[in-house]
Image 1 (spheres, rainbow, N blue to C red):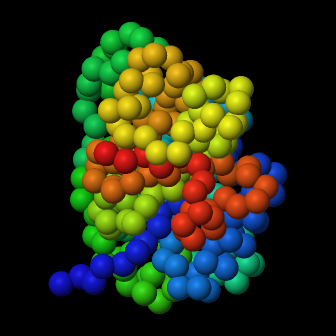
Image 2 (tube, rainbow, N blue to C red):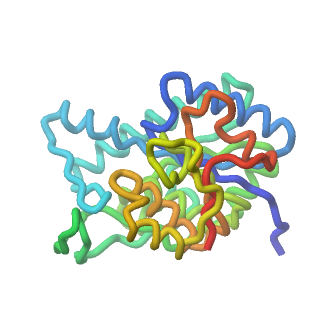
Image 3 (spheres, rainbow, N blue to C red):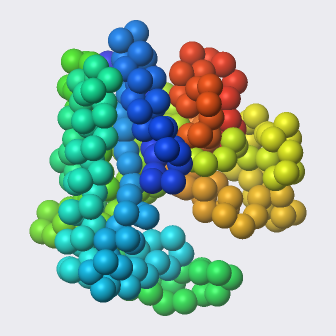
Length: 272
């Protein structure tokens, strides 16, 4: 029987933290782990992957938020994500955190996406993503063994179906792991303060919202544009089994995650 643990999963991407955000986040993680808080981190690397592909003369193509990935593209994805992962681990260690980097396939099993119909920019299209997958199973004991030793796992989103490495959307990887290890809360670190009723008024932030209310906010246009994929990523985590997802601002000068973990209202909490 696995003991229940209060684990927080932090998901962040390349645009969410600002110039000094990674160092600030690592200092917060250091302080929290010192107090006994268990933390798991999952990161993406979309902008850096795009830049490297373009440098090599390759054209990045995304459909409905997922990158179409062939063998050459997967090689770039893995190389870039390994580099980012090493940087994050080094930053954590500089802050005094014991951390270990790993690909998603160290603790999860994935299923390769087949050809499917998706909605992209309002149009239904058929797409074959290639070497892309989704998390279908997680071994939580890998995480439990590490956090019990106050080690922070830092996971990058490359999975495997047992035969082939697969590119996994970072939000999907985070959602699958969050559900598989039964986190207390998944914290999605973004570049916005949360869901706003008025995008021009930070004081209009919504503190708590359900999936049904999100549907209504999308329908009436309150949630629109680039906010929709951010919210959809949180929705995927809830639907995958995470109890709650909180969207916070990685560029907040005061606290990125400490307020949340200490119970101070921050960002927008999304629940079923």
